[in-house]
Length: 184
Image (cartoon, rainbow, N blue to C red; front, side):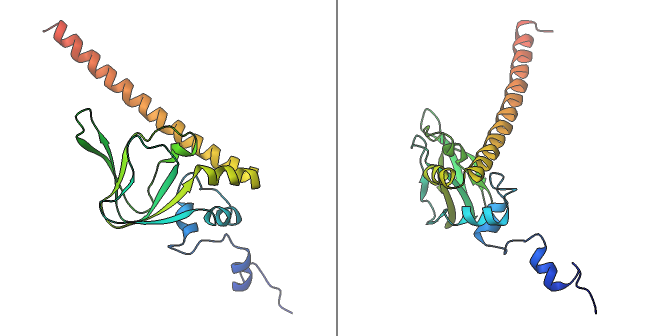
């Protein structure tokens, strides 16, 4: 009698690392660092509580100064992240497309948005909001903590990059100031 092995198609399908169907909410979420590393079961739990939203070209997702309520993941379309200067002139900081995410700091605090998010094209976005995260933490503390720790890693990485950039700019400014005060 032949023995079933892990190479059997039936067993392979049952016990292999499960991949998510391309284009599914779980597949998109798995590409976002805050949700990477979650098990299939955990990913399904998160996917069940996210909010899908459709936007028209030119429609704002939120404005600079609005209270932060949660993060968004671009499923389809293009979202422009813009900031207004003191003269109210808009400057585009980033153009986000499929799989990109923004607004994740709002999951950690409710500070006002530091920039506006405006849809450049028709967009499908997935929202994950602060109350959803808190409810998740109450229902499944371990999963909630995994997400919070990943968010902390994202924030820490961005802070390190910002510190490096500020240090580089400070050095350039010091060099320019030195050249002006000590011309050759």
